[in-house]
Length: 107
Image (tube, rainbow, N blue to C red; front, side, top):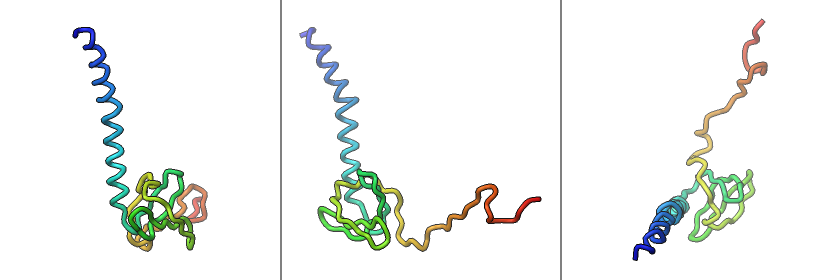
């Protein structure tokens, strides 16, 4: 019986450090994929960025460029980049690099 104790300990450590965190990540990914809403900016597992335009049970329509939508499986969503309801609410990004023409010049 004492000879099996190291094997049981190794199995317990394997479960604690590998199996349990992986199943927790998988559950969280499933929750995230089921909580998608129209307007969310997402990143697919292939690295493609897009905006959710339509939701259906097993798939969704993702706009990857203006006027270009693709149909993807819900499981292909890797992360939510940002939750944006209205693109008009996004802040305007200006070029504020030194030497750019957007501001008073220094002499």
